[in-house]
Image (tube, rainbow, N blue to C red):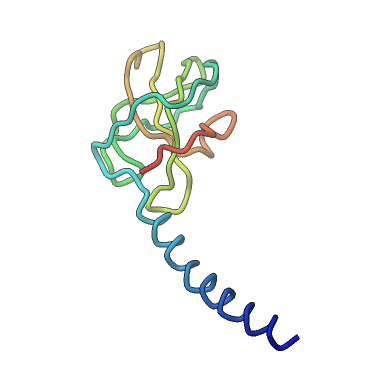
Length: 121
């Protein structure tokens, strides 16, 4: 029994040390202003936002590229975690007054919660 505990305790200690590193990596995954990414999400279009700003990065501090509204079809590319702790989807507005505008939109502003494909940076 003591040998089993002796083997488990170092493993638990290593796992506890690994948790802060995972958190730090996630926190640094936000897309800074001006970040663009390729289309990694093959999901269908037809999702919408109701007056959401399409920003140049995953932060409300980044500039606005356009506005996604309820009549626009949006093509999701991927998502990341913003500096605010929320997930953000990089997308292309496919029609309407902002056709072919690319930008980051916070997922809680999108009709189906945004992309399910992580951008990977």
